[in-house]
Length: 346
Image (cartoon, rainbow, N blue to C red; front, side):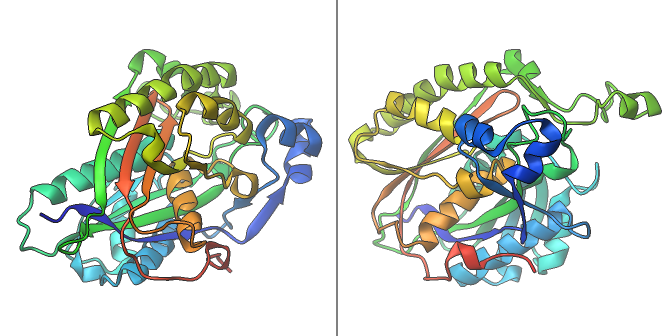
């Protein structure tokens, strides 16, 4: 029986490059300090006229073209973001309109930086329950514009984040093709919710002149707490997923993580014990792009020709909540497309 697999990938990186020198000046740190602490050399920034839906729609169109799927064939659009165009309606509604996916159900998922994997798991499960005779497709997008919610004097956050979007098309794999999503795992730790967040702007602390003056609408993070959470919980989540799926750690060929901090990822990498896998990092050039980071990295690896048919790919992300989402994918046949470096806004 055919499975639900990734039929195409796409990404969108704004053309404006922000260097460490530019971002470091306001935060009181140097290029050398940023590289030593994060491994990041530059990040992208959306232009003033661009909203999250614009980046998401561009990434979606590229994924659809690669998959050979027309917009009206898409049944589901699930957009993972914590920086929506506006509080309501869902940003996915704008994306549906922009790409002309008139038959799609469209809604947002907010699991912060782990949102893309959460959305991937959700859409895969929905498509799997539908009749195998129906050629229905899902569009899973991660998109964020964190440049709009940063305090540029806060070195803990200002240096980390960039803007971007990534997308995949999900659908049934062809008969005889053993590729597809093998297993997913979602973990939520609400007891750790204070590690990451934007305090104001919701029902608990509505926007006022005071909340703006206090900087309560900026993204805030306990960096040390997040690092400890990842070091303690990411290896456990990955090992449990592999065990539940009956996949050996030595069978994984590519590890595509949330691109939070290159130094932190290299520190936790040995604990994952993925002895035959490549650690795929794009954080040096893109920074942390929130929910977009996993699909952007996946698209870069895919368009770079690094994924062979049958490769086991492990996607894993962590974010506010706190949340961890992981997915095991047996890579299938997808159409060739231009390298990710060419997929930029003008």
